[in-house]
Image (cartoon, rainbow, N blue to C red; front, top):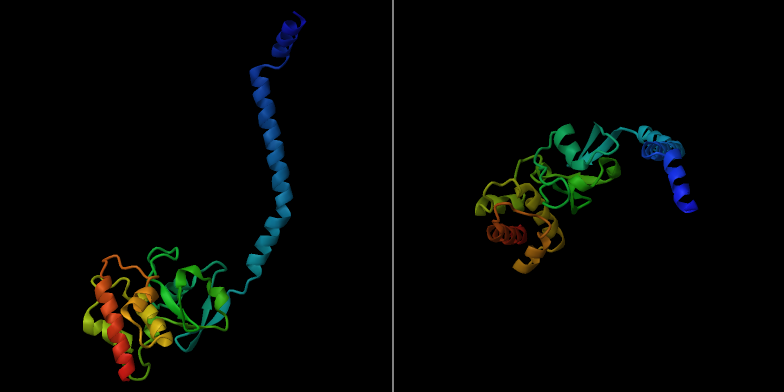
Length: 210
């Protein structure tokens, strides 16, 4: 009986509304405390971002280019919208399709997955930099693609061409299977892979005849 009475007293003393108000107040206090504790780290992060030098020099296609770059700006964004090198395409923008592939110190990499600020002192080559700057002569890979017509819509072509170029720099005499493996990081939304591989093999032939 005493237990029943105590429950009744508690119900009168702490109504459902009072209980809910207490929970909300407690939650607000905890949140405020957490925010206060995070204040120092957030301020530190903001200080770091604003202290990053925005005006940097990039070595792109053999030229020194001064460009104003945001702290979290990707190379693909810088090339297209700051340097007007629109041959570098933005496809998935999450390192899956390879449309933004460029050469960084001779290695093919996705431009959307590397920050521009990481490229100080490094060499970047885009598809615009493959042709001879003095004569306008195309590279052997570009010639092979023109000759074989390996792409339909050609949106993915620049990325494939850059990967083919990197492949031939390391393996000038690839088999078709080796070429398939070397180009596996690039996707063609038209699924024209057989003709693309034919272009790669033709590029290898042209490279050996130079």
